[in-house]
Image (cartoon, rainbow, N blue to C red):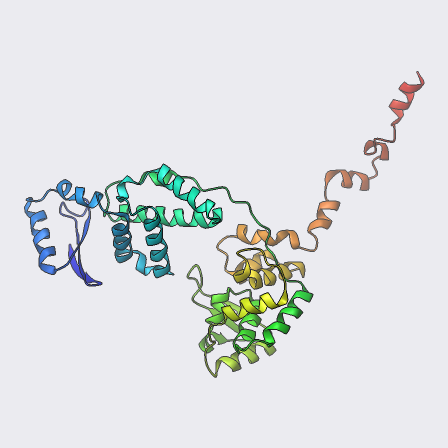
Length: 351
């Protein structure tokens, strides 16, 4: 058992029936309240079930706060995730959390779809809510499994990843050079020579530059990765970072892209440079396993999105199918050409 102060609250973490018994976690305004509750539990004056009812009647916003205090704040983009959950709660009318049923979420999804929100975005919102319920159940903050855990994702039509051609890149850099944001050129350059995400490139520090490459630490999955680059680019970018860190320049990038007049699929602006790196890497003969490591994908399946761009992809489709191989082995033409009758057909026609 333990009582710790966290964010102005006192968290009691206790298993009154021993190590294998049920775990109870509660937040109190004062340490004395936590101690009093602990003593009541241990003395048997307060049954676990009696205390569970108020917890089950907590509003969704209260559960979000508990989740954030006990678990969520340790995650990447913690505040942003909490903000989205609270916004979802507000949209639902901040219901009692245990009363949220699949049809409530179905109505929420319909409302979001009617507002023009993409199915992929809505899926991420619901997935986050489900993850919150699962974690609170693991922590014994709630004693029920929410019925919304059985909800399946909306079908998402996959959009082919877009990338910039050589001509597009020339036009982009023309507009980048016109920007008043001095950091923009360097960040765009880093994205295109390493495949880094925008946030990774914009957050690169001088200490991350060594061994003729860049080490990205604050990544999406939390794993560090190192990408070597050509010596000229390395010296140029390292020399700039030796002076001061990059300033935020995403808005400048958006403006530069707008000035180019290029049409980018919705939702791909932040990733267009990363997709461009990966697409050109594969088109120029790069290995998919190597690309997976450069991009930091957790599985090769994600990287396979770029497989169709490989220079031998279509050639192999043409040359390696069974009919083509049979033709190459000397099989008669009439086998594959309906306009040419074989000898058996011709003999039958004579009779």
